[in-house]
Image (spheres, rainbow, N blue to C red):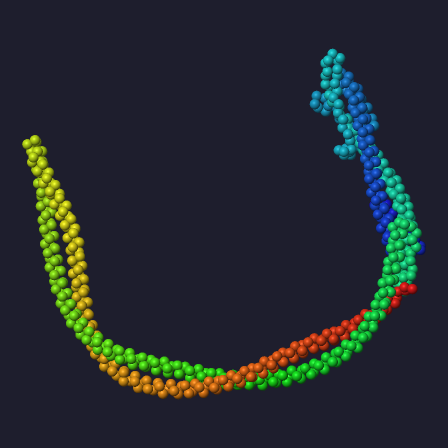
Length: 585
């Protein structure tokens, strides 16, 4: 089938209309080939489906016939073997089996008796059959004596050949396929002829006209003839509309091109004049900028000198003001110091007398403190005696308690006669308990008193030491006040001399301050004037710089415009040549 398809394609591609030449002929052949191949593929697929369906139907019919024939044979075969098997006629059985094997389409016969194969007959070519090339049918052989006694004699199995059916199906498939392919080829050729006349020829005419427009003088006055109202006719009408629109566009382009050339010429002359003027302005502005820069340098130098003068004057004025302030502060301090020295002298005399009194008082306090320490020591001794008494009371209470216990025991022994004695012994026991409890309370209170007395004794000793130190320090303070009193007298005399010098120094500082202020005012006025000159020069310089930048950009823009004008002229010339190729009238 593949070879036949290749032959058909070669046949189709070998047919070329004699009227086609060159590139157009090749192009049309490709379009024909595409159309015929599409028709060929559709036809082949359609007829292949039809052939496959027919072959499948034929195969099913043949297999159905084989099934019917095999069922008929397998139904008849047991009847011819019943009596030979029942009578054990082996030769007759073999004869019947061979007769079955000789029938058409039967390739093997198997007889089974009592579950074992007794006869197995097959044709010589049976071993060459595949599992799908034969059909198997089995039937049980039963002997019926007519009295409802059926006896199973065995089972017969027949193998029917399906190879002949497959051959018939293949033969039918190939013949149907060839017939359908031949019909498809006729349909393809007929369609190719009709499509060539109906479709290809009008398309070829459009192609030839487009070729004439593209390769010739571009004659836009030609039109296609509309011969039908189908898609080809619509294509011819649309093509004519396109030619008319293209002709109108070319006409408008020619008019616009003439205007563009005129604008290009005017722009070229104006651009040259503008570039010359801009160059002259650039030279003048550069000269002015150099002069402004020189002026800026002079102003900068003057500003630096004035700034230095002003800075030095301000530093001197600040120093003088600081000096005057320091003199005033020193004078005030000296005056205050003199007053303080006088106060300190008077206070020192008073405190010296107070210190003498304090020394005497400290000595008296030390003596009183010694007496207090002695009294505290005596109290501590008496407390020890009281503790001894408390111990004695505790012992008495303990013995009294023991005595009351003995009395209670004896009263118990005496019975009723000892009841009164028992009451007495109970009271004695209570008295002993009360005495013991009070003795414990006294011991606790005495313990606290002893602790406080010991603490008072310790504090009294420390106070005595402090009074001794105070006495020593007070004596030192008294001696220091003696020395301070003499020193204050000397300081009062020196402070008066310093005060006189400060008055003279204050007068000199005021004179220098007045002169420095006048000098600083003149320097500030000069600095302000120079600053204004510098600002004006800076503004002018910045303005000139911006003008230079703007003129540079204008110059660059004009150069770009000149270059663009040249490119525009070249493009206009090329466009004019291309437009003139078209014929619109």
